[in-house]
Length: 448
Ligand SMILES: *Cc1c(COP(=O)(O)O)cnc(C)c1O
Image (tube, rainbow, N blue to C red):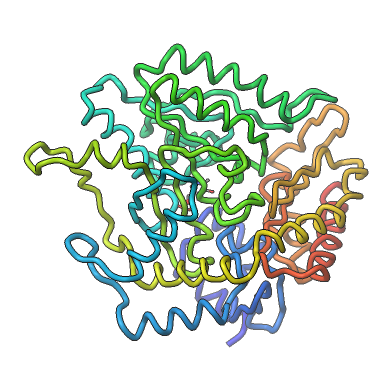
């Protein structure tokens, strides 16, 4: 078996995610045979560093021996069981440990199997909470511009990335969209904190005006990942928590991408010292092994649903694979690694190495900004460095970076004009040097 055979069979049978399939007339598909640590290997023997953690999910490398061992053991006893009326050890232990690890007050875990579903659950629970509490006017949500919360219709509606959303407008709920505190747009000389404070005025005004119709504000804490890795200061979350309380509106923290150490702390909300009313977790939860997500919430929310059956207050939502035992076991093995390996501290050293390694990118005539939050580092290319005028999207310059990187042992998958490093935490400094060098060359080529 080689790459060519598999590509041919693939293109005859598979419809790939987030892809214009016609691109594959000239853009080669890469069939992967095996993975080990940060490395992927294709069927022709080429190797690639997975610098984007296979779409942000992998945190401790491919074929991680410890996660593998845990899964083998789980597989021998129980692969899956219905989670209504039944339960199992892995689901219980995982919920207990997540409750201990997440911000104080998140005492309930509702499982599902992907990030979008975790967001849908939070939206439905928030709405239903107000319904159960007799507040029937609360039917809307507030989101931030440039946000992303997934692809199912409810989650898609809460996002604000036109590329994914615009076509489906007629099908979607209409949130009230508040301008994002995205630091990219701060004035020259203005601190990120000052900018976040300044931008919060729009949120405050919106809450003042609409709180009686609003169930919740939904945000991606600190990094708008799909929105080109734009970042903002934690003070915004602090102000938002206080304002949501004051206006009697829930706060949904979508930590699907930033949870499990990505932001530099185990959860991004820690940096603002807040507890949201709902926290959505998925991507890193199983170390990138199996689909699993969880919507965590407070006793207060849980209790609004807890009543006699005929009051019809129950949350009658389920997915076939809710609380899958293999996925829960992979998550437990992932948490073990966090516990045993001093991960957050080691990541601090890796993050600071990435920062130094890419310091010279700021001098590039077509790089507007190099920004970083924890284990996410993003390099934004622009046509004009002074005005920050972006390259037109039709030119697809990021694709030049992608193709160059693939030829030189690195999987980078820019978002538009933004090249980013979001590697598994087991990357070493030599590998960071390699992805940095390849990204530099790729950006040079892309800006020609
Ligand atoms: C990826 C992502 C989602 C959606 O998760 P899926 O598992 O892809 O459905 C939701 N929110 C954020 C912030 C994400 O990055």
